[in-house]
Length: 225
Image (cartoon, rainbow, N blue to C red; front, side):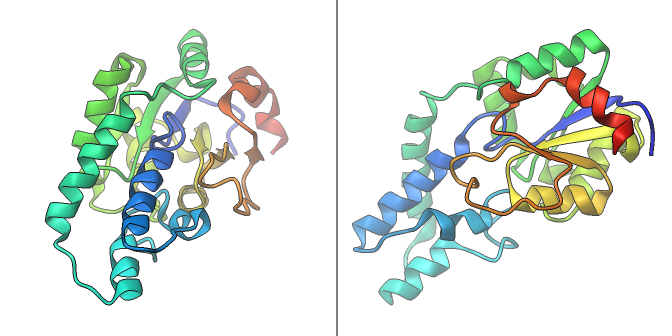
């Protein structure tokens, strides 16, 4: 493997900002309105991917639990309105801005690789005012596939102009780790509230948050792997 790190690829939801918890809360509220409880462990199956390919779909789950059919177009609009209210309170997670600043000082390239659509990422870039901190952004709109498929990470590495052996990925989800493993890119997992119960065996490193490790420490460990 390469003895030099040249790029850092960030997942977005749950890693840069805790959108996973607000998403879960809105679904939990919908389930409660219909007399059912949505466990974190069940919802977390879809974290890092989408409802279509993640093996878990809360819409299908709720319909099976209630025996009812819902107008999801209407319900999703209501849910998104609630989520927009919740997101106004969110900021970048601890360590994110420090790692981005450190990457710039070390001359490392940076990217986001997210299963979310472009409009979602762009809206957050504006709200958080961090768009200029990234050299590239890859979303499902670019590849047509979501994690655990490796295409998002491969797309990001290619557009950064680096080999997969020269990049490191920051992730918070099991689907993201699986995608990184398939792509052949080292992955450091920093689980969030939605994913901390999961088994991340196979990660190159696991930390409690991005404030718990520096890129200097990562670089020092690079040739040891």
